[in-house]
Length: 134
Image 1 (cartoon, rainbow, N blue to C red):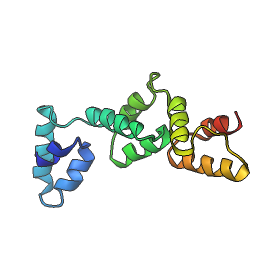
Image 2: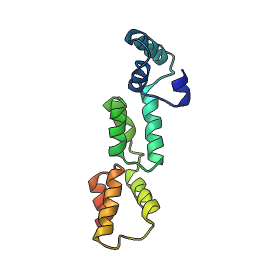
Image 3: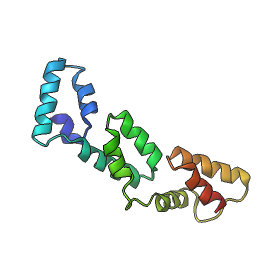
Image 4: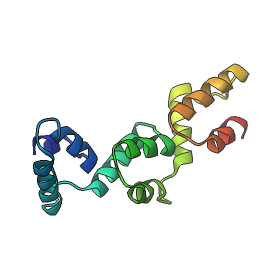
């Protein structure tokens, strides 16, 4: 319960943490009980994780990879990342403006720097190219 009181966790994360100190059978029973009581939900975790990472300026590719690492099912990931209300291009523009200001890149070196930054943030290359070469 203490782990869940701090933040949402995926089932995979909870299982991994609990197995450090407890037996497999007990951990599975606890996880099943938490899910039945609505205290642990991968769907709720995915929603909150996407919201949190998006607000920090991360793009869909990075968030998708992070959710996969946390053991979230691909269908749940797609529900939250492929939502038509998610304007990833606008987020990328806001992230670039926050980092680099409103000025266009001065030269190729600056364009490459911006491209690397946005790529590391998890934005698709077609989106980055559209921003850089518009």
